[in-house]
Structure formats: structure tokens, C-alpha cells
Length: 124
Image 1: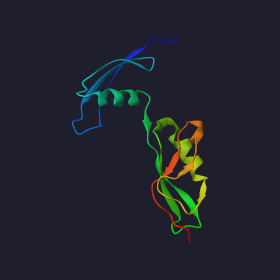
Image 2: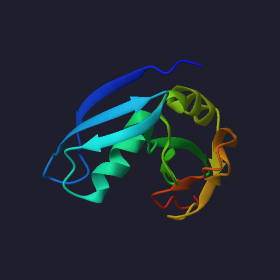
Image 3: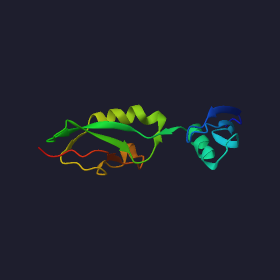
Image 4: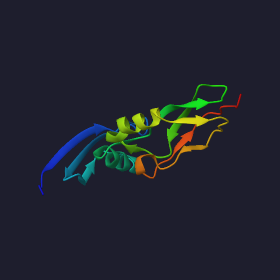
């Protein structure tokens, strides 16, 4: 196991202030964070060390007034898994009717994250 220490700098995008963060990292663990003006900067930095993103996409619908339904992940997923998640979701078709908030996929990629509808699709 290495003890490589590195410094990362990036801009926090959680709020309009846009704090310039300086993060000291050792083996994927944060040692220190400088430059954040609020606690949200700390959370943002932690998420950028092992980046996660909310997945927003569409899933095919059968028997609905729309051919697809917009969906999003219930929680951010590791950024590195987004291509795998998109491939898995491209193979899914759901049946109408669908209501906003319906869970259309449970436990995506065994991450404990659900895929939730963000639009209503009526049955035809």
C-alpha cells in the first residue's frame, strides 16, 4: 500500500459562491480541505475524490401515451459506473401507466440505488 499524498484543486459548484478548494489526499482519504466557506464545500470535496453523479435518462415505455419516461437515480452513483448503468437501463422497458415518484428499477447494479420516474406516462 502506498502512502502517496497529492493535492487537488477544484471549484465547488454547490452554491453560487464557487469556492476554490484545495484538498490534500492520501490513498483516497482526505487529510485536509482548505478554501470552503461553508460545510457544503467539505461534502462536495469528499464526493469529488470518489466522484458520484445523479443519473438522469429515459427508459422505454410500452402501452403509454409517450414512448419513454424520464427517470433519475434516487441517489448519486459512482461516476465510473455511469456507462454500465446506462447500458443496463437501455435494455429495460416498463409498462404504462407510470406516475412521478414510481420506482421503475430497484437496486440498480446492486448499488442500493433505485431509478425513479420523474414524469407521468398515461396508459393508452
